[in-house]
Amino acid sequence: MRRTIRCRTHGQRWHRYPIAVSTPTLASSTARSTLRRGEWGGVITQPDLFIYDPAADAWSLGAPVIESTSGHVVQVVGGLLYAIGGELVRLDRVLDITQVYNPAKDRWTLGAPLPIALHATANTVVDGSIYLFGGISVVEANSLGLDTVFRFDPPVPKNPPPTNLAVKLFASGDVRLKWKFKHRTSDATSVQVEIKSSRAQRKLVALAPSKKKLRLSDLATGSTHSFRVRSRGPSGRSGWSDAVAVTIPN
Image 1 (cartoon, rainbow, N blue to C red):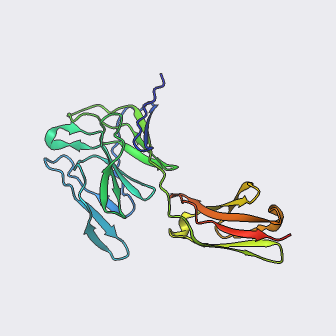
Image 2 (image 1 turned 30 degrees about the vertical axis):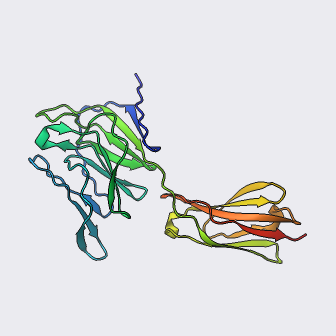
């Protein structure tokens, strides 16, 4: 029987899928350069967040986690670190908690809780979604693993909008666009150009980040057009830039 469990918190979702898994798999994850530490099987777990900077070959301390656990999942999606589930050994409890760390703000917040409490799950990220396979929901010796698969859809973050948009007309019939990204250029896999005419017409054109030219034949002459751009990429979609108005001659 197919069952789906969905939980929403500010656009976040957990989904449950049917799968046959006979035993749990414990998977440890290294999320880019940020590591989270707990003491597996001990009485006390630590709330410490240790951050490694490869360029400086140095460790530093980040903000402590909200709830210190062991056996949790750690993954990174959209520049945010997710610490999911885990157990409190001192209390013999497994948690359904989702803790989200923002490196830019050095701050933890709570995300959508798991449909059930889990620890010791195998996990991976595919197309921006976090998948949890199997796992254990109780703190008991010789406890059996679950046959569940859960998928988590984090909210899609927005990059800052492009700035300094300039539009220039050429006698050759080209319209050349120039702009600046406030985020990393590698985060933009495409650029969307919105063109609105004074005749209330609107069109969207997709460009590669390196291609910044449009043909005048695509535009109505003898009218004013408003241009604005936004970027799209693996870390999210930006907002729109400020609009620039240009009159296309006959």
